[in-house]
Image 1 (tube, one colour):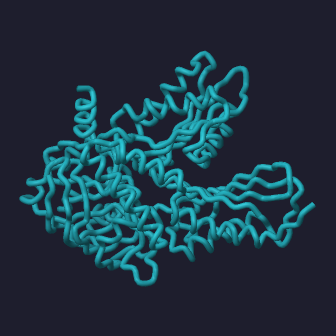
Image 2 (image 1 turned 45 degrees about the vertical axis):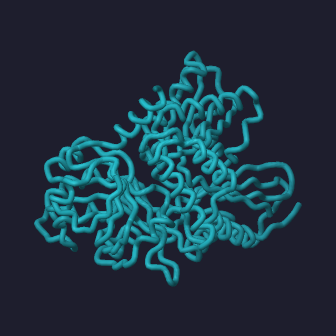
Image 3 (image 1 turned 90 degrees about the horizontal axis):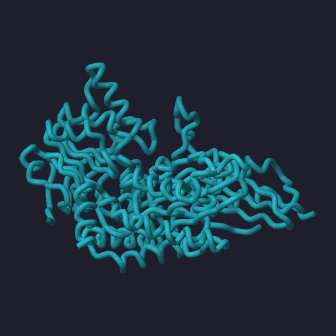
Length: 186
Length: 280
């Protein structure tokens, strides 16, 4: 099913999204990957505040290329989400709800998604030039020393995504493959 | 004896880094388009359409195809009658990478220590592979390698008694384990034989070979076809969302090996399989 949605990703909105839905996402999201997540989780462990408000936030696992003159951002496709599995439940525990990436997630992340009504969106891995077109604003907000891994605030319009895992734990990686094989073997 | 100034090497490496990251090789584009024509699922077709649109944008606007502009793998086939002058060859290659990644607005993705991390800030050092060949030319190939796929690669030291079936199972198992992580449709490089390290190098070299080419040995050419078909029966599909196209190519490279062994390495690459060459 095709859906156009506007952030923030509230609990109510999250519950309307199902694995396999094609979603065009509009609103503010944050970028973070390995080193940024490590820092945020270390800050939380010390009781320090995060550089962004995690409430109903959506985090895009991406490390873009540098913007060329005249570009908002360089190529910006998703990185492999599994490397953020160690941090994702902590991020959801403080309110972050949406994750955009690619690749499989661990069972403990899926359990946390069910607990906090999280949604895992897939962007097309390797389509960084195309995805950059949906990013209309980009602002560096923290961890500048991390370069491509710095924390950025993005405004995206109609970003094409697919719901991979929904808040009930349904998983397109399992269901999509099973459906294809069932149809082929008919 | 032909003298080549290392500054020529710097210039070529700089150019190839930018070119490889911006323009996908024709064989890869062609394979993706052919696979799009064979897909029937709606999600799978949509994903492949977006992948095609993406490399067209990169071509037309001279921007990186993927944000993971990789570690710069630089292969040099050096003619034995060449004498490099004007400086250190390794420094010259790294300077080419440094300039290419700066001027091409490519991502700097290299950390200076594997455990303690810390970005080097200029994507150096390159991974350099040299080979001495007859003649007085130098062929340079730059293959930027992303790590979403690199991380899904594997190596195994088989017993000779495992035979070809052991290798076939290992290829399928590795692709199955990789699943959606390496941005399928993937390209699979297989290296069989040599030593532990040489098998891995063969697998990487297999990824530098055009995917519309075949191994010159008919036995391995048939194995390439058979394994690609088997992989595309797994149903993983584009991006792992289900579908026919799990891989767009599989290349095998081999070397003689020891009587006691049968090393096999599998280097996984994504649909953004990049390599550009130039001869000096």
